[in-house]
Amino acid sequence: MPRRKPKEAVDLFVEPKVLDAPVVRDLVPFDARLDADQLQMALQGINQGSNELEIIELITHRSNRQRQDIAAVFAAVYDQDLVDYLKVALGLHMENVITALFLLPDVYDAVALHEALEGELADEATLVEIVCTRSNAELLALRDAYTTLYQRDLVSDFHCKSDGDFRRLLMSIILGIRDEDPDETIDPIQLRDQARMEAQLLFEPISEKLSAVQFSSTFVLMFSNPSHLQLRYTFREFEKIVKMETEKVISRFVTSNVAYPLLALVRIAKNKNAYFADLLFQALQNSAVDEKRLIRLIVSRSEKDLGNIKTEFQNAYRISMDTAISGDNSYSYRSVLSALIRD
Image 1 (tube, rainbow, N blue to C red):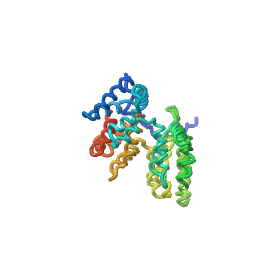
Image 2: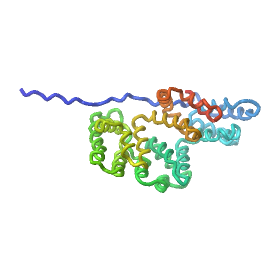
Image 3: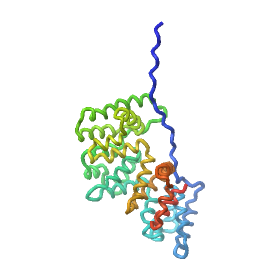
């Protein structure tokens, strides 16, 4: 009898399942009227004593949805806008963080993107941070919020303020058509085979010694639509071929105007929590701390995966995120961020 051919060894890697770890969750039980009354009493006495800590503890230990309920009850019972009241009582130094806590997430993102597009030159760092890390559903919601707030179309505004491969890459993402990560039933062999094909396509510009412009266009095309899981498989196969990390290939061969978002996408696909940890560390290292960015990074991830980001931050920089943020108490808004971080 003819011998059976031995089965091909399957070269696969199995990713450990990492669950999102929010640090802010719905408080159970929750009573919006009770919280509104407590805030009113604390706000009335804030000039006579130090009720600031009590206020901070309350608003940072409620989810965004619950803060909306508290604000609605406060307005109905006391005929006052809670957010405006808090800003006046706590001082202008708290204005940005209070606004961040009480805006709906899609509205908060829409406001940040509008500010990023307002100046003569777009704030590309903010555009990349938000657009490249939000899900398709979140992108759709923030686009709707943008239209409602400004009576303008976000895609059109972005198109006017960007150009070249940077525009092509982020436009393809902001439309919300990227493949989402598949469920656990996906065949890893299928992922690997697709990755090998895509890795060869990424390698072609190198093997054929194409120009940086052609190289960039190929990478933009290949990075635009696959899920982050598929990209991780593709990077693994690509790095086997080139014997180099994908990040180093981009830094070496890609044109400068699109290298930044491509590098961000690689880091997000490989480890989104580590990406956010790096952004937080960079924000804290600047001589003039970008207050709005620091607040946005903490607040926007607090109900999603900030617990995971804290772990990555500790592992990478050998200092807790809480210590890094609260270390300079001259920035009083950081007391609110520290309260959020302490889950």
